[in-house]
Image (cartoon, rainbow, N blue to C red; front, top):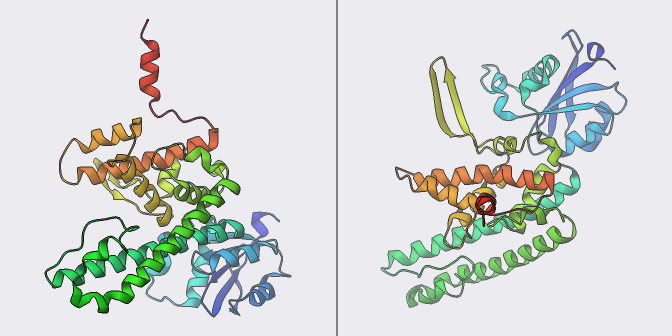
Length: 354
């Protein structure tokens, strides 16, 4: 079907029901209505309809809905919510108008919606394992902070230690008066830590057996099985990006821009895209620049930036390293080359005559 004769359908997804609007190629409203946000509802609307362009907004239901619509032969565009100001700034915002707005923008040029690529169902399941681990880690952090804060009120302090060892090392100095009160939290902390260790084991096994390409990424110091697997699952295919540096923008690690005439301001990073992967890349950069990081070119470059001093110099350096790390991992994945931590230094040494 040519673009000139193609109808466009905007669907405003809701938790129980979704509104839809069907536009002709000339922009006339052909049909409007409401369907249940279920497989049966999606099938009833799209199963026997001629091929159309369907525009939906990214959200909790968009992954499975986009897959369901695609199976019926339609083109699906998943709009980035950050680029839907025409909807969120409307003075007449409701589900019916939202569906129509999605259809009208999608009919003109889907690129205006900065379409999002949803990963496959298998990748989504594996990524759910990584996110479940992340929820436990966040819960452990909140429990530790609560224990430290409670003890501090009574004039005591718990020793500094890692989250992994806190349930047996950090809680040993809880004041006697608080032991009974805080015992359930300590027990919960111990249980959560055991579950995190089990998730870590499953991630390592999954990385080795199901995603062997992660070995290329784990060549870089600071990048473990967790970050490498999340990177592969999030991008899915390295061919999606023609240039490695575009991955940095995809995960929101590039500065915002505000350029007009002679003014060209460099602002904070965009923080767009996948926040989970961005957090892992920043954590890897922290490790690479920390006391346990091994010597390699990216670490040296980051330490040079941090040494320039100034307010938040170390923080900016870590973000810069994470940005380069995002591009480096894509390059290693796409090319399959062996990573040389000190490539420039080795090249200079080789050029010195004996």
